[in-house]
Length: 371
Image (cartoon, rainbow, N blue to C red):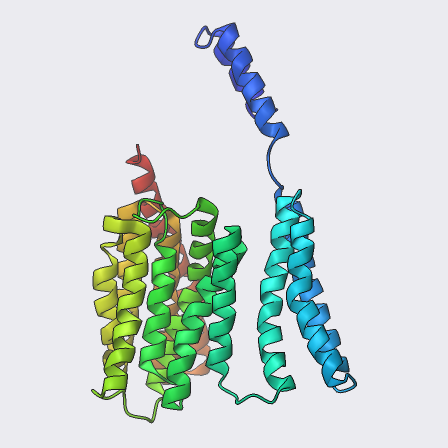
């Protein structure tokens, strides 16, 4: 209350707000403070507690797995999958605690799927296990409408698609999988604001933005590095390659349109640019750096168009990382040891200052024009 009470008192004394309205504002704020959800320390404790409990159970099972009989192993699998969900249903009076327990149950589902395959000596096709895990996460989202279930589904679905192509192609360095993951991350980053034809809760959209922001730079680096060092030919025009490229390009674009509608217009040039990525990276020279710079520029454009800071920050980070990689790979080897260190220091100092200044200027521009 200390943050708004002095301002409300000043407005009342100046005659901008009458006493009756000020009283209603106070009552509304007090009711709102009394009915707020879990604060961030409790959220952090719940998240860390859920991770530690899940990791501890998995470690305990892994340490004693060889000593368990087949019947005991299957009982542990059932308890791992169902126990958390039953506990979450019992804790329905505390929504945050229940959501944490249900999330642990869905995480345990993945372990249960692969442990079941080991118990019954099923044929190993690990992408199929990821698919079953994703189906369980989607079922949890459909039944519970809790953002951790949707976040797990949003992570597992592209992981399954990439895993299927990697398993069929036989190599990790694949432009199809890398391009698809980059586009999924882009679609997730652009999932806000909620102006699309599909009604998705704001908490779920925020989770998608975080997932995309965390995954975008690593997936872009994986695409660039795998294509740079790849000794295998790119996916040919066969039916499998065409289908893989169609899924990698169309599915993320469809997700962006479903989440944003007309607001997903920047995904069209982004999809085209990412599709050109494997070909440009194979050209070597400065082509890979131009591709990375173009991707960062498109992300900046999307952020400025939507007046959102997250795409702008990610675009600036991508541009800075591109400059650093270019310096290490193409400039540093041509200089002496001392000159390379001095140049690196100047690049970090001057370049960091200029980038931060440009970032603040861009953010200030659309904040000033915001309604």
